[in-house]
Image (tube, rainbow, N blue to C red; front, side, top):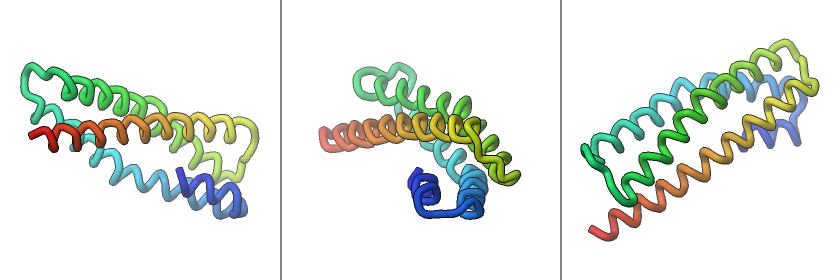
Length: 123
């Protein structure tokens, strides 16, 4: 998100295109990391999660769906349009959607991190 915002404010069209391609390649690392985080949470939660654990698992479902259904397709679309140097209202509309969905995921991940720390301290 920071890369997108900085490239839009201070960069030229080549910088924006390079940023979009970097984000696309970054998905090769980010998606498996998030999947591992979610799967490890499911394993630790056990068969009948309750309380904060259940809340964290519900958030991870939203984060995963948001990532797979919105963020990944947006990244591909934006990288494709940027490589063609087509920056119009479709590009900026999808970029806004990507930033919004990314902000939601960031907030949910932050809430999960906070709750994880609380759970660790309560032990």
